[in-house]
Amino acid sequence: MERSLLSVRAALVLALAVLAGIGAGVLTALAGDGAARSVLYGLAAAGVAVPFFDRLVEPGVPQDAGRGPAAGGGGDD
Image (cartoon, rainbow, N blue to C red; front, side, top):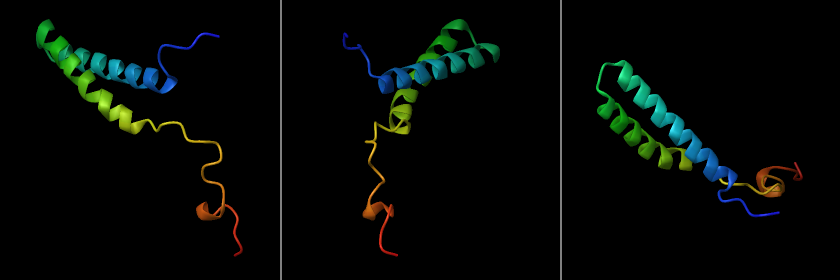
């Protein structure tokens, strides 16, 4: 099987950023601004959304994280 170009996390972050940019552009257009300004606002929103969603979407956590005595998963109470 071939490797994918993007990881699932990167694809999710980019998809959410694109959706945020489209939403900002549509709302700007509905507010009555011109098409050029709507595109610029959409691009700006997408640019700000990438680092936001990058921090929001947690990187992969191993299956056993959270199990063990340190996590309260089974001690001598």
